[in-house]
Image 1: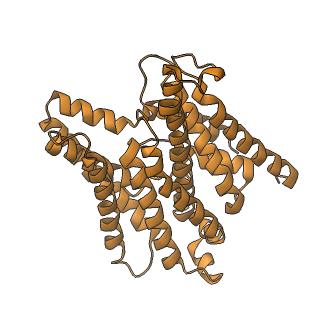
Image 2: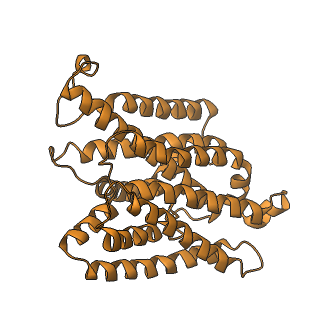
Length: 325
């Protein structure tokens, strides 16, 4: 049994490590960034405040949000392989994005049609799955899980069909979007993702008792006074809203939402009050490190962050599975 002192020390270490990454990682990149130059009127200062700092903050907000979403879904579905994209949110968002790229590529670039279409189709996908699930007499997580798999296949087929019809430039834009990346400037994208982060943080802590019981068994949760229908519906739509908002801005980023709660569980245990706090920092740290790798390994070019998380997250998750008792 993990001692309280050891657990507290581990959680504090993760939080401090993540905060240190927030402070240090903006200085890493192809262009050397001395500390004395970031407060001057120079090209280096512009790169630091307009690109490096927003990207690092964006990676933290995105990673923390996806980690909390993954934690909630893993507890709701009582499935350690559940991800923030389990209900087809990611594939629905990708379908909206590729449709917008194919149909509205000629629109002015300052109109965020790709992001808007991605967000709307992601929510429509979840509403469709939820409406189908309400045909059952009770909140059935098993049905939702299988329905999400089915919708993923449908959306993936439609995406492939649209890509087949697209020309070379449109196809390249679609592939780039679906890889997921933080190639933005300024803080506007970070601010757009911030409501998802704040909402998921508040909901994760507010429903920590319900998540503890739902993780064990929905029937046990009901006998302890948890309205599983109401709690499940609120959590389902909150996670879906947060994932849709994040994915619409930076594309689908894989593995963080599945791996981060597992790492956090090794450090903080299974109580969701501490697990949520730790998952938040672990997810943010993982994605900040992945973004740092993506923009430095083949600099001045960069690898999409989604590619890095998949390449690093897959083997790491296998290692966790092999080492677990």
